[in-house]
Length: 279
Image (cartoon, rainbow, N blue to C red; front, side, top):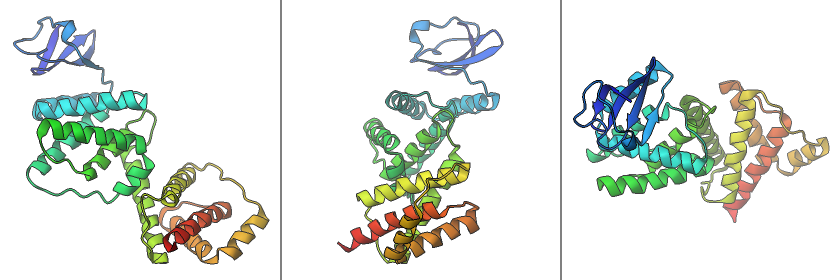
């Protein structure tokens, strides 16, 4: 492989045919010039970015951001792909690196970071969150800074979004924010504070996530026996009324439709929340 462009001491661009490929490795670009042959044994990562816009953004990130931040992001991505057992979308190399570098800069300047969706992220994406915790320890060890749990949540969101064939970051954020809004409405209506570590909360979060995905995609919902529906309406009238209010809110504000069966199942989850907070 011959050097086409040098981005920094550890990253160069090579050309194979008409395709430009970014390769990374310690010292791979040190002392090199265009058309020099690189040592293939030093290559640790190879990026073939088919999207030219993504390629240009990644090249710009490598040229402008601290190498230490880039190396941290790449270590996190490699670990995540191994733990999740899947290849992440190539955009993660741009999105996570850019976000991580900006977060580190803010922390070092003493700015506080708050992630109001942290509890929902932790419950919805537990694998990604645990990888974020691993990244937290790595960053603190390498940079000697206190990396907050709020940022662990942001890393988890980036990783979840980057799974191949998954939702965009915008869609993931919208769903998570909507779940947060629904939980807040339940707490306000019942006059309770939901315990994030409780099984009732975990089940409610999971149920809302799948319900919203089905509503977004137009998938069919599970049916419910009419007699069972009437029993739920009568026995848990307060919880049912709240579930109906949430369904009406989703329809009016987000054009998402929940059928009677789904409102009934949501009623049971709300009832569990109410019962758990009174014990």
